[in-house]
Length: 121
Image (cartoon, rainbow, N blue to C red; front, side, top):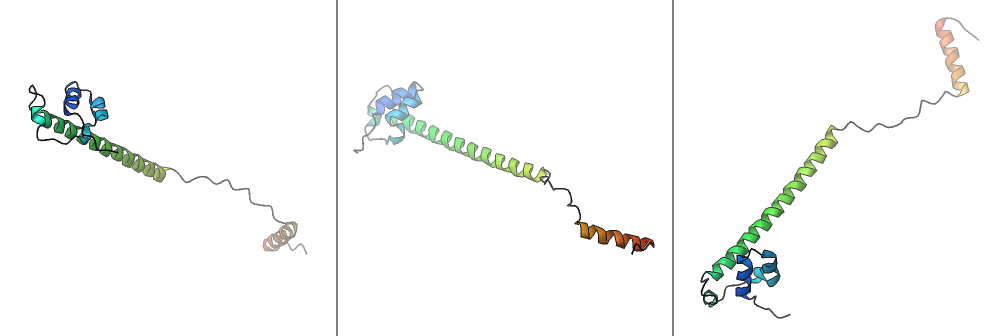
């Protein structure tokens, strides 16, 4: 694919009309000032400066948006961690203690009777 230089005059027209979406579509971020760009439009001898300022403005906005997204993700992660620490431990449903087998129940009853002084044997 050939490296095509964006049309500086079309870019400037979009920037002046505050149509940055169209300027981006035309290649605003690929614009590199050329030695004769300041003479392209006699009404705007500051054409290269304006286009570079628009690039700078967009880069700054994109970087700020990325920082905001990272901060929001970090705050959400911290909130989830804090909520996890505050939450009571999950309740585990435990079945009721199993009944003693018949033989163990008989042994326990005899032991209780002996301890009480009534020897059932």
